[in-house]
Amino acid sequence: MKKDLLEYFFHKYYDKFVGFEVADRTIKAIYLSKKKDIIYLENGVVYKLKPNIIVENQIKEESQLVDIFNDIKQELMITNDDFPIGMSFPGQSTVSKVLKVNKNLHGSEQENFIQQEISKQLHKKDIDICMDYYIFNKEYNIDGTVNENNPFYDVIAVSALQKDIDQRVEIAKASNLSPQVIDIDYLAIAGAANFLLPDEYKDVTAFFYLGHCTISLIVMSKFNVIYSKEATIDAELWQYLAYDIDSVLQNKTEPLKDKKVEHHKENEQHESDATRLPDNYTEILVSGDVINQFADQCLSLLQFFYSSQKGIDVKKMVLVGCFNTEKEDIILQSLNEKLNIAGDFLSFKNKIVLSDIAQDNKILQRIAPDMMISFGVALRGFDDD
Image (cartoon, rainbow, N blue to C red):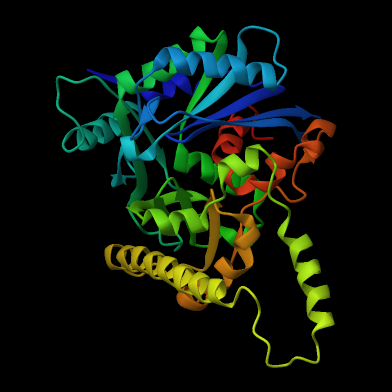
């Protein structure tokens, strides 16, 4: 039996909405509001999880997660029950496929054809699944070429186990929240990118998402996901690249730019000593080796994409996830040199208005690239105008 994933997408729109990212390591939530077509970031919360609550994207301790959702409600100062929310769903727990669908198929004929194609490879017949699909773009093909004489649409279809979707919905309801949206994590990133990035990123763009000891390549064209692949990375490499959640939550680490100023003043005192090596010379060498290792892994993912998607060239690069933004300059420089692609970190920049609470939330500002899934989910609560 197959159920439509869209049952969770047909929701009315709201002026306030919270997006939750539910992941192995953390729960992240962003509270947005909309007033006269302006999006306000009201507040955001990061909650560190114990190792046994969610394991490899599978929720193991439902009651503990309900308690955590209630704690997050308090931190976000949500006092009323049935507050509308959306939740992320891990892309690694879904199966997706790009289909060629004849333009002459419409309505139920088109849907039946897509369901039949999905069913051939996704799941056993005796397991309930939910499916969703969307036409990539009626005017363009996935490779960015104009779709004029092509008799087919590119259709992207996604499937997930119904029980995994239902589990998340029931946890939210048990916390007296009203789940309106279940959004796949990489599609939430696409929604955030579509809102935050300028039109030049509509070209084929590679998004490198740093998860917990993983790096994912998500390729988008016209802000639609056309490819995704995840790879594990060495724990020591990940620890260097990612922010330390404990120090972030305790607000212990000083901003790097302050350190740069101090380092600059120190250098002024030693201008006459031209041969003096910096105190952290060994650390710099190690950092360079680590960054090069990461850049090589990103290059490998990109080459795999090129081998599977002939004729599609990546034009831009965006970094998302739990990167330590204090190291963003050296990370970007290394990737730019290795991949020969210009890039940037995805951030809120000037596209949204921060509330007074959000402006004072130093944690939220420091880990903005790691809040994009919850941000993209939260955007689903508003209309497209």
